[in-house]
Length: 189
Image (cartoon, rainbow, N blue to C red):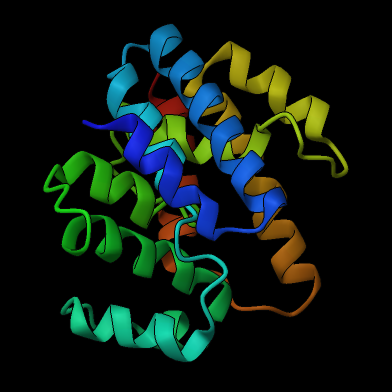
């Protein structure tokens, strides 16, 4: 893993997005060490999670289609989700990073999903809680993320689902599946 090469790739992003990606990488490493995920994979996935965020929608769709991904109806009508999908494809196809865990960590960093690995959860939470983030309840989700990955994710998913439904936006079934899975696991204990 040539981290310096991948850090250089962030130069194609705006200054805000580059700093965000560096912050997510550092937070992902911290969470990975705390919760037993691979810190080097966390760093790499964190660095590259938003690599296609600033590419226009038309080109994101081309990357997705060329990568063999067929969008669901919800995904097709939710362009804000495309950067995660095109980003995962770019990391796999352009950079040749064949690690399935890194692929999924980038692919699901905005929606989450049921059956997430520790690495996937770390990237989801690191993106949500990176130091430059400021939105209502950021301190609350940061506190929950210190309790457990699942508590942090549950709060983050509640926050996201509430905001999306409050605006009349579509909600990814993956987010609902992740939310339900965590609640079911909690009720089993």
